[in-house]
Length: 513
Image (cartoon, rainbow, N blue to C red):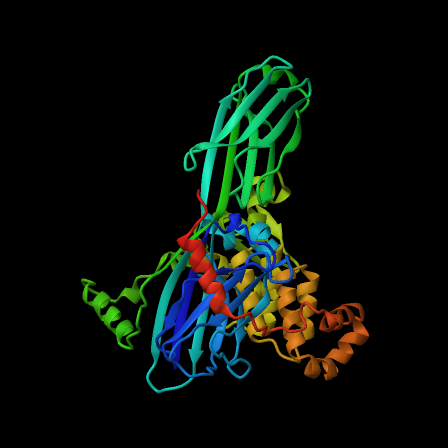
């Protein structure tokens, strides 16, 4: 087994200026265990052909390895807790990399998932983390290597804080000044009216700006309230705009009082910096040595005899210690802890902190989840783990996770189901994703169907599915003729040699910022 993992951190990804068909290329890395081959990742933040999706490719550079190299590889987006949010696997039976060629997925993940719906998971501190795992099942001795690449989209963040206490019809002009460029970039004209504030945005020295976001808020310091606010973004240089911000009823006179303008202008100009951390070779004895080191520094006893906090919490539940909330099912009652439910589920948090009957009665009825599944669900809430997961249990847990918005459990159930999907159960999975309006999950199931369309469409399971649910399978079958998905999962990318050269020139000769 020869394996190599490359982690790629892309900072300030929200300020990417790349248009459709334009990509960010990672630092070049060498996969030592795999014939010292040279690689890069290539990300299209606004898609290669479809602006609704990120496109991601693995490209081989020029090296001294085999002319044609077949490998298994897997793409994943990684959360701050090192949890894979979504993954795609490509097998060596389907791809063979020649020099300067590449393969990947043109619809890797929806932009809406990354930038809006699950931004907190995908972009902690506005950093997108991608992982590419590569391996070959050959050799007796396991060889492992890893490296980490960093790409930073350079930005400048400019903050505004101006007192505006005019009488009606007075005009204020505020300037956004760049310390890096040592000049004013934008002037903001502010005119206060009876029931609104008129604003004119006048860009001046913005020819180098590739992408920018401007947010303005008018804040009353006396009543500590934002009166109105507005946000604009520009792909390319900022343009002149006219805003009319409506004041809430009752706040018309407050603009004459203690009002402050708060603003934030963030822009990128196309400058990129990147670097690669050292490779980390694998030693087959490393886990053994670490274990022995830890054991040797424990004064007495066994570390496994000392339970962690998750086990301690679960023991409180099992032994009914300080339980303060009841969950009633059709056949039994479970006594739990409010603080655990609220910490793990936004639904329970709203239920137990708002003015709802469950809070008053200290009890909730759950009749749509079987008792054994509810036990597994609670086990996960308390310990962040589950045992002996099987297909039917995973589907039921997915339902529970979606109902109570336990995102981590939902992701793990999706991962298990997608890894175990086959011709016989794919119809059930497609219906599950469709019923829960999970677009990312559904897209992954559809991709599996497109990969195995001949087997699936000829199966008795699919024929029965068409008889019972004609609309959903018909809509899925039409995807076969969608040109944007016709080449999935492997789409040959352009020669990366010129791309890398061009990217290096952009780094060596950046636009001024």
